[in-house]
Length: 217
Image (cartoon, rainbow, N blue to C red; front, side, top):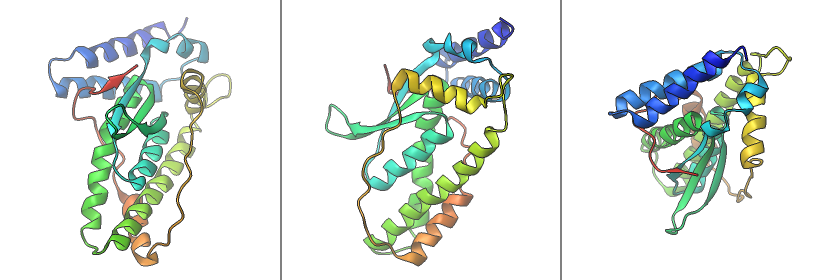
């Protein structure tokens, strides 16, 4: 197949990420693998043969707004977010997809959560903070919508976008994205708008800072 060398390079990078002697080396290998997967035109059949590169990474979440944030992080990284209660009774998100994408999602989650929490420090009261958090997630969603629209312009030889092909493979392995029912609540409009603005300007170019932890299969 014409992409054998490319796929072999991606496999080696993923292996390096798993076996690296330091978190920094693992992060570099993961970023390079992700870059190759995004930038190169890969045939669907080639990708389907790489199901061994699919995996799951988990992270604990603590409030409904962070579950919303997890869904947008998953969309950004071509993953599915499985939000449930773990064996220890803790609410967890399992990011499912290509392992490099799942780990990237795992690393982005605490980073963006921390950004939102720092922004919320300017507001007092539970309702204001919650309004900011929900707005922040909405702002992240707007950013992700724009990024995905741009990615879909990267079509393959068969006229399909790489992001769509990857999505087909991830869904075939893990199933469709499931959405829970959002509880209705009234939000402070001004604080919500501040959250949206913060989410729209938050950096989504977060680089991995450590090796994959909490992987599940």
